[in-house]
Image (cartoon, rainbow, N blue to C red):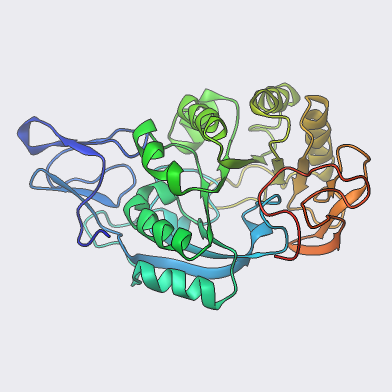
Length: 344
């Protein structure tokens, strides 16, 4: 168990600078300065985390809100976050907690020990602890301590992440990680540079690594009119994901103007329907059109017989057609995922 502000994955550089190796920015941080995330600070040649055990959010959520549709459908996740993020997305819906304001001040947060997180998750009847809302990479030390305790308590661990970890960080996280929803924001390097302040390739590498190492992965792409909704770009995304696994669920979700990205309209339903069809044509067996509830785009159908195995309206489960083994109740076809059978 870690105590105090010491950070993981960094190396000293000349002149008391340090190099952080937690995310793919690999920030060189001068004495007294902070990394891109705003929550890792060089104090006299030693890298410190400013957010260990300082939660800005903790809630009991439906697992479908993450979204993770193939991790114990209908179950609940105890969701936690600290301040900070290593991206600068212009459309961030959680910018009030992800974007650290005054770089000279202590990031806000309520002190909560990892044992308290897991105890609260168990008391609330949660199946999973989710590290979400902001970017869990920037509070990896705290997340890892929570994850070890959660695993001991019989809970699953899930990250909702931008996928910008270094291989070194993944090596530390994967042994305790059951599932991840990774934002693949676009298949355009320009989009990542201009909208997110990051690069595309490290995200693709993270996806390859997570799938190869057996972590259950679902992917979300927020479809923004005029920015990443070109059919050819969506087709490239779908082909990449299908190349990783045809069973990898892809969530294409609707955009609403937010934060600094207000020049685009809400995503038309027709665009999401077309994106879903593109994913299916590319060979993906589970493509979900989200954030426009009540149109059937969030239901899980059996890839063998076409029967409805999980019906959803928003975050509510309206139909369960799974047997206790996690297969289709109609034909027995296994539905890929974690803890799909039985009652969560």
